[in-house]
Image 1 (cartoon, rainbow, N blue to C red):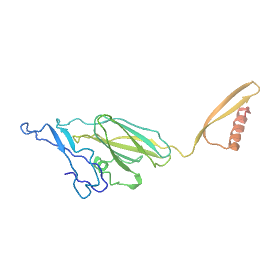
Image 2 (image 1 turned 90 degrees about the vertical axis):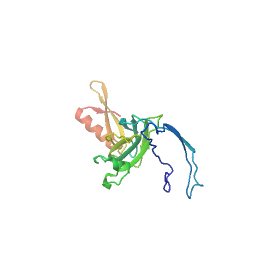
Image 3 (image 1 turned 180 degrees about the vertical axis):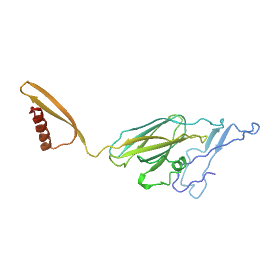
Length: 221
């Protein structure tokens, strides 16, 4: 029997078979049904499950790719690619947080130090797609983070934790400022480009006048 607590809508279980070839069941069908006080509220997507007993899984799963994209001031997307079907257990925290043990990440806590702003999660890798994308929101702007990832397969084999660091963007909007200067004596015009924070008109004029004075050039428009 698989028990569900209030609010839980999914679970998993493992089927074991005897190692004795004379009594071993290579495959079969499970018939499932609901029982309990709320059995009339919920429904099953299927009432039968086909299974096949395979040889012991001794291969160690691993993360073949871990990358962070679409980074903004308060969000980011983490892409994880694994070597096989498995469960991905992860922890996102502030950079500098020590590597958490597998047990902590699988059980999703408790957080040893609340100041690390750690958050846990788990996602399953499907057979037809080894790539998983996890979206994080409500992050703090201009803050370095680290994500730790464990993968566990059906044989309870697991990897050594892998990690990836990234930093959210600043709330300040950076603009590329282009200033043009003219050398009237030699008839040469050139531009200087500055990756500066947004400037008001007075600040722009001050910078242009200062540079033109040093270079003995006339500031352009």
